Amino acid sequence: MSAQPRPLAESPNPSPRADSRRIALDAMGGDFAPEVVTEAAARLSRTTEIQLLLVGDDRQMRPLLRQHGADFARIDLQHAPDAVPMHESPRAALARRESSIALAVRAVASGEAEALVSAGNTGALLLHAATTIPRLARVRRPALAAVYPTLPRPHNPDPFALLLDVGANTTCIPADLVQFAAMGTAYAARISKVKEPSVGLLNIGEEANKGDALLREAHALLRSAPGIHFVGNVEGKDVPLGAVDVIVCPGILGNVVLKLLESMGDVVLALGHEMFQRRWRWRVGRHLIGDGIESLTRFFDSSGYGGAPILGFERIVIKAHGRSNARALENAVKVAAKAVRDDVCGAIAAGMREIVTDPSAS
Image (tube, rainbow, N blue to C red):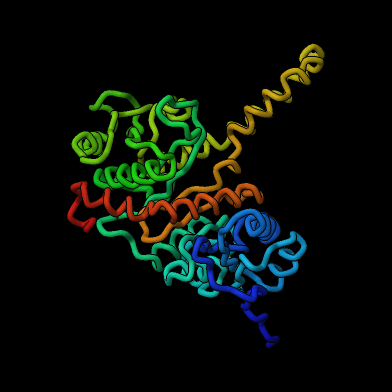
């Protein structure tokens, strides 16, 4: 067996700086890894104080980092001899104990890094995190929270809102939705700097008696939950309109909504292209409205907001989109560092202590 590359950083001072945050980054996760991951790491090393722990194949990471002009004083490398394929089942991925996802999760759980960002296999990341990183007290189930763009909200300068759960929990009990609201409230308050984020329950109508038993009971619990500014039910049309700062729902419903939102940028581009091809007058005017179309597609571009936080663990974990480019990964790492700096986990823990939940959540 050939000798494995040494998992040593090229930095003469591999310890994290006192004024920086150390974020673990899965170098092998995503459709375009490790190229775009190392590009993002190199940019971050040159433009921020963030200390990175890059986990992946040492033989691939080092030359790519040099190619992108990385400052190795801010990047530590940990060799991972294995990687989880993007479409492998979560259970099979859990057996890959030496994969980049597994090693990065363990580094965060042990305190070697303060947060984790990965664009890799979602199920694998969720399962490795759930079996390795402790949950916060009272959290029954962690939630995958998607950040999505909305129309402007007068009370909130942040152009993004939060939707959770979007796939970590396909089945829920009413208390779960209350916990999702508490976690989403804490995250939005710390990241978006909104003093009292508004919370809505995704349903088929605004009336309290709408929906199935799960949604009706969740509505009743949310209405009396302390620390949650619950404004009632919201419908699907309210999601992109920015009706509230946080929307809670069962994971299967949230995932459908998220995938629909993600497709809108492609729809706008395709429709615009088709219209311009049909009529010569529109083709002539294309250059006049080109900037507007570009701005509209940027509105739906996921690279602007990085990734989806997995809330409920004692450490911050962010799942970036599998198709993430370098800019998206940069933003995901910056959000992770901001969440650590602003103690999002501590805020969630405080919020969880206020609400009354099912006894099994303790």
